[in-house]
Length: 246
Image (tube, rainbow, N blue to C red; front, side, top):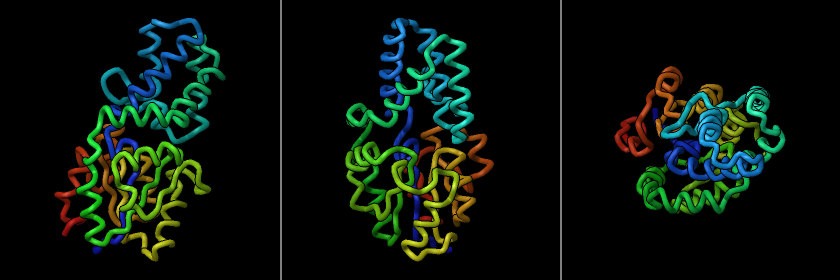
């Protein structure tokens, strides 16, 4: 099979999720604890990190950030807020703001914790091979732009789909089909690369030709292995994939 297009997830795929997002979410949790008069409560801080999916030292694949059923996610967050006597609205708004409104913090974390040249060789090589490249993420446009600018890969990307666009969120394949239609590709000519099972389900529903999982996000190798065609430690392993670079 000759592949012509490749779609990447962003967080946890282009870069290590924990390295970049853990500092951002810890700051959000510090703010929450301060607002409810529980600053310095290390036990509650750890519980908040775990339920989010950040964890103390590594990702928790069962955390809220890896849940793509919004209703179930909100129910779980509500039950947690009740159990810990935290005002639900305060908790929800603080977490939403930290995820969708913290571009400055994300930029600082990217600068401090990642090599800005890390992705350039891969994206240059893909483009030289003639690949059409897409980014499909549940993050918003501003945070996505911060990331792509930091890594200097925006000139190599042909389509970006974010939370702010009109496409339905993954695993619905609407954005996948839009990518195929825009560039006159058949689904089987497109590769999808992601860090979570939802990315692989998204690829399957779109009938992608090749599904590639990486472990720099959820680190959920057990479940990723069940739905991906292959699982790699990082995105850099794509260089060794003969199906992509034949």
